Amino acid sequence: LKDSYDIVIVGSGGAGMAAAIQAKESGMNPVIFEKMPVAGGNTVKASAGMNASETKFQKEQGIEDSNDLFYEETLKGGGGTNDKELLRYFVDHSASAIDWLDSMGIRLNNLTTTGGMSVKRTHRPEDGSAVGEYLVDGLVRNVHEREIPLFVNADVTKINEKDGQVNGVKVTIQGEQPKDITAKAVVVATGGFGANMDMVEKYKPELKGYVSTNQAGSTGDGIKMIQELGGATVDLDQIQIHPTVQQDKAFLITEAVRGEGAILVSQEGNRFFNEMETRDKVSQAIIDLPEKSAYLIFDAGVRERVKAIDFYDEQGFVKTGDSIEALAKEIDVAPTTLKTTVEKWNKAVADKDDSEFGRTTAMDHDLSKGPFYAIKIAPGIHHTMGGVKINTNTQVLKEDGKTIPGLYAAGEVTGGLHGQNRIGGNAVADIIIFGRQAGEQSAAFAKE
Ligand code: ADP
Image 1 (cartoon, rainbow, N blue to C red):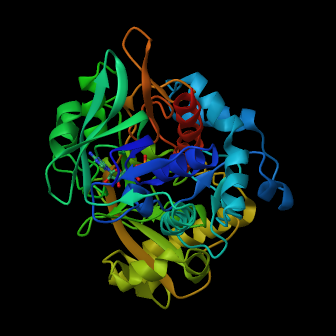
Image 2 (cartoon, helix red, strand yellow):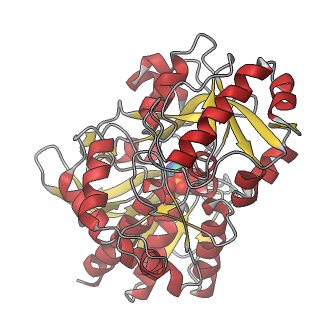
Image 3 (tube, rainbow, N blue to C red):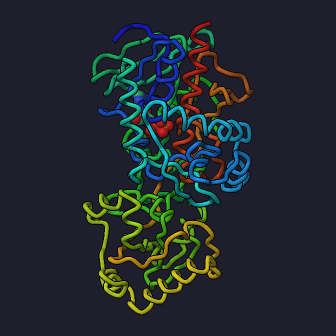
C-alpha cells in the first residue's frame, strides 16, 4: 500500500473494475479498495446479461436493432422519468462497450430478450451461463494482467477534500488503523443499498419484510459519503423488486428463464400476466395473487438453453415431472388445469398470438420437451435505481448543478438512468459503459 495514487477507486464490482482498467489504459495508476473479502460485489450475481444495440453480434445473427429503439424502450420501461442525457450516452456507447469487453476476452455473443425489450439485445456468455461470474472473472483477470493493485477488506469510510476539491480517501485495511490515501481523483463505485434494510425502509417503507437478493456489501456507503460532501441524489425511493426470487435463500432466478420460454402460473395453475412485461408490472401481478407467489413453468428445452438452471436444481429449487400432470402433482396444482394452461400456451406460440395476455417476445419455443420443471418464486428487493446525481462525464453534481472537482461516480451508486423501473440487462450495461467513462474522465482530470 502506497500513500498516494493517481486515482482511488472505491468498490470492485463491474463499475469499479471497468473504471480501473480504463484509467490504466488512459495512462494513470489507479488503486481499487474493496471492503468485502472478495471482489465482485452485486455484479457477480448479475444473471440476465448486458443490453446493447447495433452490436456486431446482433448484426452477425441478423438481428435488426437501433440505438434509438433501445432508447425509446428503456424510457418507456422507466415510466419516462429516466435522465435523458445519461440514457442517450448509454445507448450510444453500448455497442462499443461490447467490443471493449470482447477485446479483453470477455465475449457476450449469445442473445436473448428481457421484459420490456422488443428485440434480442441482452448479450450473454456463449455457453448460456449467468453473466455475473463470467464478467467478474474476466474483469479480475484483466485487473491482474495490468498489475492494478486491488485491496480487499479495505473499507473506505470518508472521501477527503480540501477547499472543495477531492484529494483522496480514508481507508481501513484488515481492521487496522484508518489511513489517509491521497489521490488526484476518486471514483466511487460502491454499488447500491439493497442490503441496508434501514435505508430501504426509510425511502420505501412498504418494502419492509421483503427478502433481498443483494450481497452484504451493498449498504449505500458511497451515497452517504457523497452526501457529506454536498453531492445531490435522485430517485432514492425508486427501489426495484425483482419478480422471480426463490424466497428461502433469497436467490434470484434469472429473467433468461422467461426469456427462453418459461411461463408463470398461479397456485390455481393458470397464467395470469404477460411474463415479458417490465419487472415492476410482473412483480405487482404476483403480489396481487391471493398467495403472493407463483411458479415458473418450463421444459427441458429451456433448461438446455439456460445453464443456471442446473445450479438452481442443485440448490433444491426445482421440482420435476415427466409429464405436465406429474409436475402439477409435485407443486399441488390441479393437473388438468396446468395441462390446459400449457396446451393453450403452446398453441399461442404456434400461432405467434397470445390473445390472453399479449405476450409478443420469447415465443420461439413451446413447452413440449419433457421432463417439465417448476420453480416457486415471489418478488424480492433487487436494485436501487436511485443514487447520486452525475452528468455524462460521471462527475458528481451538487444541488446547484456544479461539480465537485476530482469526484466521479459510476454504477448502481448513481441514479437517474433507469427512472422508475430498470430493464433487465441494463445494470450490467450501465456499470461497463459508465464505469469505463469514469476511468477515462478521472484519468483526464488526474493528468491535468
Ligand atoms: P456496481 O454494479 O455498481 O459495480 P457492485 O455492487 O457490483 O456495484 O460493486 C460495488 C462494490 O463496492 C461491492 O463489492 C461493495 O462491497 C463495495 N463497497 C461498498 N461500500 C464500500 C466501501 N465503503 N469501501 C470499499 N468498498 C465498498
